[in-house]
Image 1 (cartoon, protein in one colour):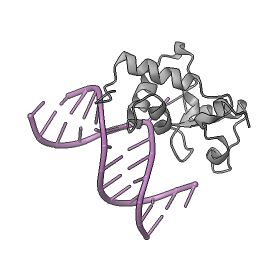
Image 2: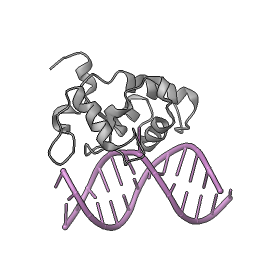
Image 3: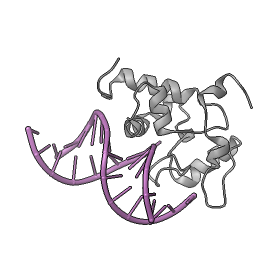
Length: 116
DNA sequence: CGCCTGACAGACT
DNA sequence: TAGTCTGCCAGGC
């Protein structure tokens, strides 16, 4: 299929497509998005692609978080606080630690078909 | 062409 | 869950 996960416009579009279909109120890990984008093991590349996404892309990149439910440093989304506000506004429950309840909000590709 | 960095992840403690 | 170390992969210098 593909030998290396070179960040080509094609790959970027694939990632954008996956991110765009993350359900409202759910979050997905970088590695998960990477797999769904046919670039397994390239979680970091997903992060890079996210950082290169223009604001006009209208992509819910704030729904993409790392595996522990923690968000990027201050340089993303204009601050972690801001990202948290956006997610909470979508119905994502946060813990008092400032982390996402991953167990409850981590997106499963199966949830595309079964809403629960 | 080698070395360092990074919006990451997994294993272990 | 968090901290630490290692692994992975592509990009920048």
